[in-house]
Image (cartoon, rainbow, N blue to C red):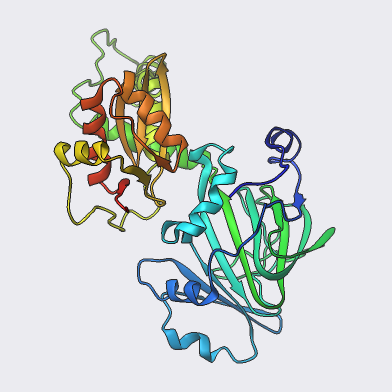
Length: 384
């Protein structure tokens, strides 16, 4: 799938994290990739995050899945919305929606949430702390956009929903199948289904907070320093008038102990690569039932079988030199050089890859493929 006549550079310059943008059906041919019944089926699964939002008068009710199949036959005349998270991890046709947006770096992409709503259904006026592309898949939805919000914006009291207390719409559009609305972080918005069978695909982007970055970095440092014997020392200690004082010299030395490691850019790059590619749901085991070895991989490559990335997996790399990278896949770091680095860069860029059996560093590439396959990050397309 691709967007027709969509200028990536102009979008990034004029709209990304700046201003909303309505894009009327830019697809060569739009086809809704998921049926409502399939979405309802996913919401019944134990390992898939789902929510049901019901509006009754001025009140909002939130239920968390998994839901029994009978739940949807009990909705009566209520205005309701079903939301299912990370559908791209389970439905390849939904995962394909991400490909036109790969001009945004991999580490920024979160997942595709899919919602289904009956007439009048929605989740209420709110704002997000991340960028989102809202693709109308089926039916119609009215989107109202308001002003910029932040932590000081007044919210309605609700245990599970972040609803704006005073939403003042400034713009309004009705989206039809194939239409896309981009909403930057902090912009108030409210979507309401116009008629039944309304499906929307929300492509969200991650934006780690300072607290999350520091927490992840500190956790990584602690792990690396588990056997560290570099302890505080003060061989030049002098008598001081009050033993209760922590001297400026001690503070400076203690601070230097921490900052020496904290300022290690390579260590941070590695830690962030592992943090940003960690699986969205670490409890889901994507490992294959039958692991492979190097001989299996060489055979598949000789037969011309393509490699396919697991839609639930995250791939990124950090360049270290002209021919070396730190390659990250599902929270693991693989230092790569030469031909292996070239392979790593290619698999980060493409969902499907035909590895060349005559490339340099062939055995090291095979070994990397074995690791990625056996941890569930990639598989071979063995179809005839």
